[in-house]
Length: 294
Image (cartoon, rainbow, N blue to C red; front, side, top):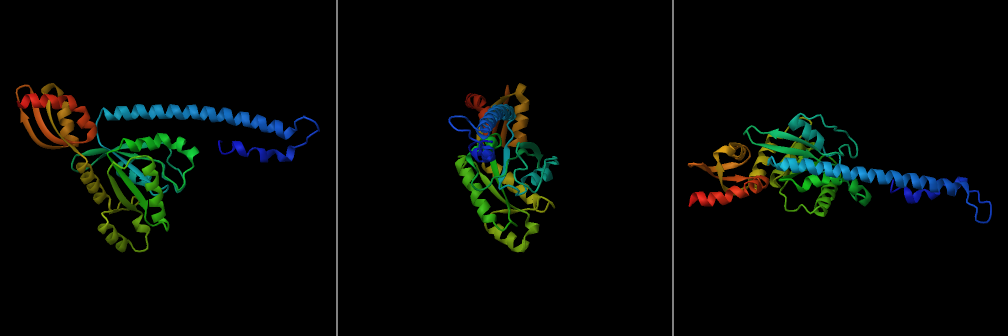
């Protein structure tokens, strides 16, 4: 609508009938009416977008209180992110061969065979030279990326312009200021490529994972790589957990890597590597850990 607004003038030239002097023609009157309608609709949509952003923020805050690592799928539009989410979680997310099939971020829980789990978020597909007026519409989904423990860059490696698409996505990510978040590159649709074996050999040299989200090929290797990357991003903590907070201790075991536990009179002293959100939650207990040791 913002794109349409300055271009309305040319739409009504066929109605121009100036009657001399300062009298306005029909075309001019219709333009004013149309502009007013468009401005009203734009205002209503912006209000709605603000409401969506607040809603997403509440979801994120709620998620942070249950500190499970968040893995975000990013990539060029139509790279197969929604198909991968569906493959891993059984979610019925729309996966279509079209631009921006995913507009609202979808988050689902993924449980690995090791018992560890993480939240997987599907985000909007990027395109080259994304118009600035569209960035506001995608902000609700793009904001999800900044809260991630890991970014999975999904690439349609069978596409003839795959390299250009990778550059476009990396350009958008640098604008979002998320360089500090660990990244994992995944080449999808390997089964559609001309020489899958050659691609897999090339990927192995670059530490890239090859998968087919549609057939399930390479999914085990993908999950192993996610687990390794998440482990690398863990923070080392030492905390004293009172016995009445046993749920926190079980969360540490569930999503962290425990090095040592020591059972004391009033609680458990635990040394572990945990995701950053959980480390923040444990901050008050880490002070008590120092006292307990002494």
